[in-house]
Length: 286
Image (tube, rainbow, N blue to C red; front, top):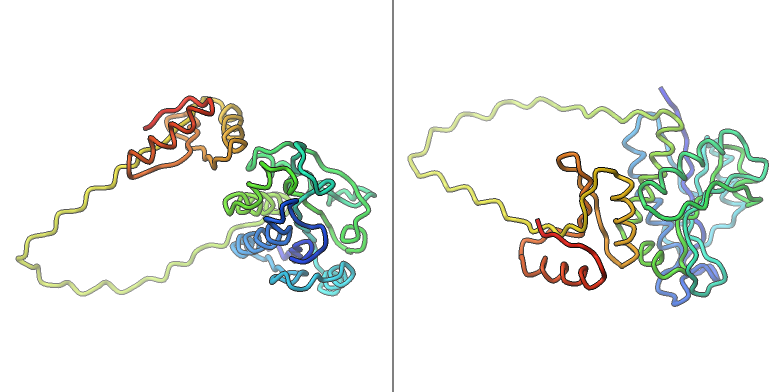
């Protein structure tokens, strides 16, 4: 069985100078720490995996880089994953995307893991692929194990900042990193053990009339496209993300359907559909 010790590291603290959006609406640690929590929770579902944080989850203390790598080395970790949100000069810009770093010597196993994680991030988020790169970052240089550092989008790009603030996007990033680790190390999901229970005693049948089952609530789904190729659906979903929406792709009848939301009140669906039409989308309410 696999015995894998994974360091999960959220870069910086709430008060690290400069590590924030230009309008200070998000500190980098807000994103980083959330992703580490979701990644940690996901990895607990796999056999033989142990995890450890090297940051302060509260964000109050900016743990020194040396303290982080010392803790990882002392624990004899197998993998070090450092999670970040990117920035250029602290001013709004239109560049963006995701990139993953390994140490400048380009270690073979780190490169293989980074390549898998990067591919999963691009697949799940639809953001621009900035590739796998090398750098002389402390956590990559001083950690005595396979180490990668992931930059999951730019805080000084308005569209990507909106994603970085989104819980859905944070969960996607965590799942993508987990997927890369699962693929790299052949992790196996834990089996769920079902404990048999004694059958409940049979109660005498009541003569009272049975209640009529409630009718299921009809949902009005706002759809902006249905495609036979997933790549086309991904492109339309990415366009919707750039417009400020949170799309999802449902697979039905061999088609990839890009949907914005599902509403129990048709007027709410109509309102969203009208907004989308004004922004140039073809809309269908199912």
